Amino acid sequence: MSDTINWNLLSEVEKIKYDSNYLRGTLVESLADPITGSIAIGDTQISKFHGIYQQSDRDLEKERKRQKLEPAFSFLIRVRIPGGVVTPQQWLQMDILSEQYANHTLKLTTRQAFQLHGVIKKDLKKTIQGINAGLMDTIAACGDVNRNVMCHPNPAESELHAEVYETARLISEHLLPSTTAYHEIWLDQKLIADSKKDVEPIYGDRYLPRKFKITVAIPPYNDSDVFSQDLGFIAIVENNRIAGYNVAVGGGMGSTFGMPEAYPRLAEVIGFCYPEQVLDVAEKIVLVQRDNGNRQNRKRSRLKYTIDDHGIDWFKNELHKNLDYELQEARPFNFTRNGDRLGWKKGTDSKWSLTLFVEGGRVADRNGFNLKSALREVAQHIDGQFILTGNQNLIIANVSADEKKQVSEILKKNGVLPGELSGLRQNSIACVALNTCGLAFAEAERYLPSLVTKIETILGQHELFKEEIVIRMTGCPNGCGRPYLAEIGFVGKSEGHYNLYLGGNFNGTRLNTLYKETLTEDEILAELTPIISDYAQNRIDGEKFGDFVIRKQYVKETLKGSDFKH
Ligand code: SRM
Ligand code: SF4
Image 1: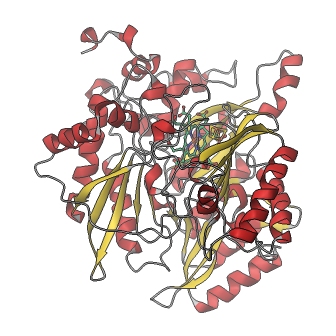
Image 2: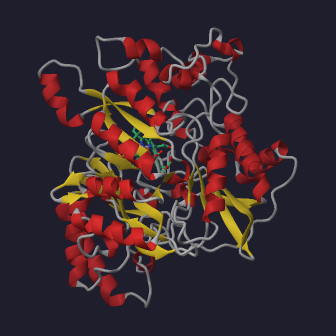
Image 3: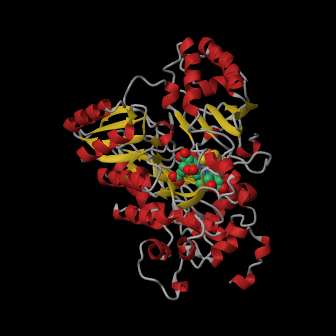
């Protein structure tokens, strides 16, 4: 096979994947090398498929250079949690690992997964083994494969949650890589002498051209931003049961400054399938991307570009060639909102669920707000579940009325649930950015909370404190906090400077539009103040902020991804 491939034409990651012997690379040697805290360059690509990213502490960059030391290398470990559902015991296990091997915090991601930051090389294996002991894994949490499969998180809001969750879990299992490298390297399970025996029936020996992302949504809640995913299944509920799923393809948020050909794009609905067809449809869509995605230029290799390069009719045609049947015509659906609805809700089974705001998804104890300790105590006392949401929040789910009381007391005692949150803060997302993300141009998680406080003051002056407005910030244009779907979006350009985007809508079905470039905080506030005042005075009853800025022509609606400009 390799003889027929002209590697010069392909991105260098293609050769690294092919040569990795089904994701082994030289990871074992890299881990054993005592000279450096890093791993070999090729292994930094392969480790991603195992859920591991090499990083360095960017706060220490200059000082380490001055001292002529290598960067302060450490690793991010991402844990695959389909649908974000873990048991209290699994939560406790992650808590222990974060204290033992990581930076004492847990990060809840925008894809319902856990991240541990700051794990050093010598502790990587012990940490992965600890995750495994908690019956979790990190396989395919990153890399050019299908990633953590998301779904609507709240059992209290949908009787059909269990079915949707099971669908997400099955898709995740079905699309896992088959290689035994993970178990061999991290869990010391049998060494395969001739590991070429490994086969990847779905992925092949070069895996996908790029990452692939799937979610399963239930209208009216678009809480996993279904149109931002490579593949979205939208549950169609008829007579109180899931009749099937609309299939949406070609979403993605990643983009690059100064590269108009790399843009965010919304997924398009191409048809409907029955529940029993979901795994097959997902697999066959992955195969179309595997065989046709761009393997030369990683900036253009996501499914959204495969579709834009060939056309949606071509895509449907290719898909139907792979399926033994055709997708049916898409069925009507309506999303009313994205984001999470915070607070206690009673489910139909008389169990309670609490959706808790976790700012920036960071679970830590800070300044008397002892979220991490509180959740540890909750996990020690309840029988329900911990569900990570796609908006970096947490649902303490399926607890009895007695447990509900206990949970509230524990949170209160630890300074969590302090006061009323503004509608803006409740709908905020910030990606990790500095100090761990190697791609960040500016702060996000560590900065957005204070910016929100300042915008809240302006909103308060106009009696808009409670108004729900979706605000998102990322430290670079890659889009990890899905900023291009926000009503107010910020993307970092350089330290202390952000592009401001306006005009996404509240239900996550419209891209926003660049309003002003490279703003400082003072400039951001000066730009937003008159718009907020105008909104307070001139909005139509019930009109959302994102719709208002378009009606009043602050920005023009972005109709398709390829029109998006930075
Ligand atoms: Fe992301 C790369 C963090 C969700 C688009 N993302 C990264 C890396 C790994 C940086 C790197 O490659 O070195 C970041 C690690 C930072 C750190 O220190 O933790 C990172 N991404 C995150 C998380 C943790 C953000 C968060 O604050 O929650 C999210 C983890 C999700 C998970 O559990 O799997 C995260 N990333 C997303 C999303 C949102 C989503 O999936 O719903 C997107 C936009 C959707 C999409 O993929 O189009 C996203 N991340 C990217 C991209 C751009 C991809 C592209 O198509 O161009 C990169 C860069 C890349 O892949 O080259 C990236
Ligand atoms: Fe890093 Fe950029 Fe993703 Fe933020 S959006 S986590 S800065 S890659």
